[in-house]
Length: 169
Image (cartoon, rainbow, N blue to C red; front, side, top):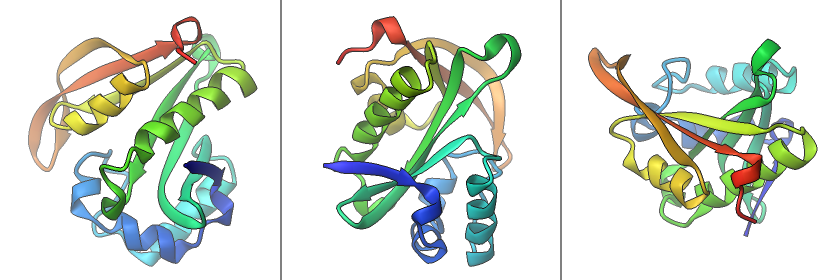
């Protein structure tokens, strides 16, 4: 069983060791660099602990750091929403950690932050992440055609969401 812990408690070395992986970076926005250096990890931790990246958590299996996840509460008329994001280190893929982390984040979003909707944008080729969201109760709302560019290629993006009244506990 995994747990979420404030990202400030994670070590920059643990983050860098798992994050420096093209198989992870290819599924994330370009703000997540590759290669991922120790300096990138230090900068990330500074931004995250200062609240610049939303609510950011380390994902732990016991005492082992296995990945990172976040909720980014939105502003103004969108303030009832948060965008969710997550990545799991490749050695820990296929163990259900991402699905567990998403469910824990939904608890934070709906029961601690009082939000009504959580959403995620998934690149068209990231079927594993789509399955994680679907197993967590998210529904596909839309396919946004030709909306992203990654490594010089144009791709569609899939919008998934879940509302508090749809959450299955």
